[in-house]
Length: 155
Image (cartoon, rainbow, N blue to C red):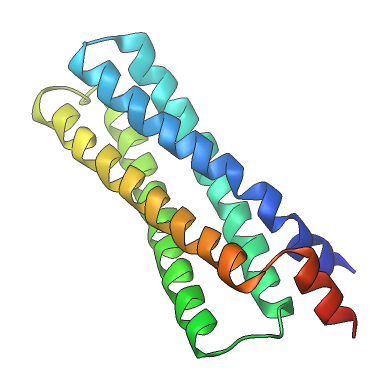
């Protein structure tokens, strides 16, 4: 019962890390470019929330993929790409978050380090995009997480 619950909420949970990490990227870039301390601090908070949301998205996604039983070569390849991007996104965001906290606490978030985080923000938004596109294709092309999925698993 618990695993089915986790699998069923994946399609709802995934929108949180998408929104939070995309917002982080935008705020980080804007805050650094325009030298707005409040915006960069807000970006850090949103990044932390995005990492937590990404963890739950990966957790529920692993359950969802285990419950789908209509895999073929193309859908499995697409799932592997989706999982790879999602894993890179989770670990990359976690590492970036840890670095961002470290530099903020040590009062070293300045100079070139700030501009390095613009690059990190761009990498995060790229990974969010790729993960989302591959996940959306799983739903659109193969019906993963849809009523088609639910009815085929009950047969």
